[in-house]
Amino acid sequence: METDLQKNLNLDPKNNGMKAEKSLSPFQLAMRRFLKNKLAIIGIVILSVFVLVAIFADQIATHDPIQYNMTNIEGKASSEHWLGTDRSGRDNFSRLVYGSRISLTVGFSAMLFTVLIGVTLGSLAGYYGGKIDSLIMRITDLMLILPFLLFVLTIIAILERINITIFIVIIAMTSWPNLTRIIRATFLSLREKEFILGARSIGASDFRIIFKHFLPNAIGPIIVNATLMMATMIIIESGLSFIGFGIPQPTPTWGNMITEATNLRMLEGNPEAWLPPGLAILLTVLSINFIGDGLRDAFDPKSNY
Amino acid sequence: MHKYIIRRILQFIPMLFLITIVVFALAKAAPGDVLSGERLDPNIPAEVYDMRREALGLNDHITVQYWNWLSSVATGDLGTSMQYTGRSVAELINARVMNTVYLSLFALGVTLAFAIPIGIYSATRKYSLFDYGATTFAFLGLATPNFFAGLLAIYVFGFMLGWFPSQGTVSTVGLSGMELFLDKLKHLVLPGFTLGLASTASYMRYMRTEILEVKGSDFIRTAKAKGLSNHSVLYKHTLRNALLPIITLLGLEFGTLLSGAIITERVFSYPGLGQLFLTSVQNRDYPVIMAINLILAITILIGNLLADIFYAVVDPRIRYD
Image (cartoon, rainbow over all chains, first blue to last red; front, side):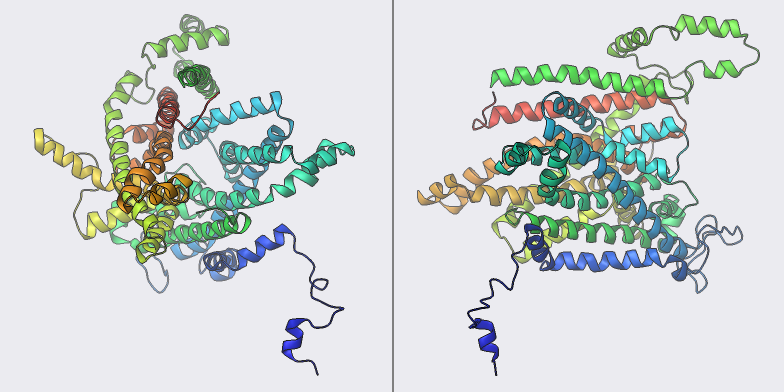
């Protein structure tokens, strides 16, 4: 009968534990470190709750979120309307529930699109260098000089009419420069490595080198920045919706809901109308930041943040 | 170093031109022009309309138009507003720009006054209760959208406690001297802290990280080995080096503050450039929109330039070639 001690000591010479456990890839090691991070796990739990609410919005909501009712505007919280009603008599609770769907989707899509642009331009600049690099970097510098919010609002003013898709495109087209710089820097640090030289010398195509050799090695910074960017996107969406230039009404988003509080009477008398969506944004952004910081520590254990 | 500064200034000039080109292109992309209104007026014959277009140079080649626009901007002529008929853009901006400057400076002051001491204290007592408290505050500060923080501030300090006014810049007309100054200052408290919240949170973290980083370097070990007091190691050696990147970042912070001011000013009905910008976007008053874009972009550009030059001057370790 084998005891626990024997098992742990691996006395069996044929199975000394080295063979049985396949060595972990850097990615798996990072994931292991990540799962030990308490704040990151809290973040995942909170975010999961919001994602579940977004998925099951149809079941959770008590009313139609865009059904107006002019006989019951700016209503207080009641058993019928748990968080009261807004200036058009729409149910605040249902708007909060559906708002999670819109706010998370817009934040996620805008992030995805930005990462796509940022990684593509950063890869091109970092891989090819030379004229392509200087052209992309000049555009990046220029974009970073332009005051972000002003620039976005100017484009919105020129386009006159916007919907969710156009909104996401505008945000993505103006948010890529930081990511481009990070990816380019990562690529530049990899360029002179031996394995890249090896891949080149056996005649691998540019496309293959970028996808098989550069990008997998840049996966850490990409994932970390993408995560943190999603939090930024949610804040940007809510801010623009709040000032009335984001997702047009009556589509419920958290930022749209807080617009109610621009009316001082609502701000003072009906905190149940604007406090919950504000807290929802805060909690979502907080949990995404926890996850992002956890990922950064996991991918780059030396970082001091 | 002088060479570096000269080169840096030389890089500034093409950037400035690029910005004017972008703003001009945006202005051209905007629908309508100065005469769009007249075209719709049936009493004005088409020939008159064409003549006026010709006279204003709207039929010229695009480069000629750009040059004419640039030379008038250079002399301070930013065009006329479309929403406030007959008023020049420069006049509208002049009336509000100082309010935004006060607000941004107040927010910057808040950031420096809180972020630096708290960052230092956190770093010297790493993982203490204070450090955890500061970290929690930083996380919350970074996760709270500017406008939500502003609404909370109005609700708590404006309504519930009644400590500070939450709207506008002055309570009543007719104040003067010290009274006016104090009244204006009071009106700055809530929007100023709101605008400074996010940067305070992030600079606190920067400061902490920077100090911890410098603390680990060789010259600090040398200073300790010489037998210097903890106080002198912290303030004479660590802090001086840790503050450098922070001051550079401040040059870049200008853009963030000015952008953030747009939303903060809306929340507090504070009559600054941001408020003017938002009403202009609402009313599609393109001349005002473009002028504010241009002014802020140039301000940010100058901020970056000064930050780079400052860094080159104060940190001799960095060699530029």
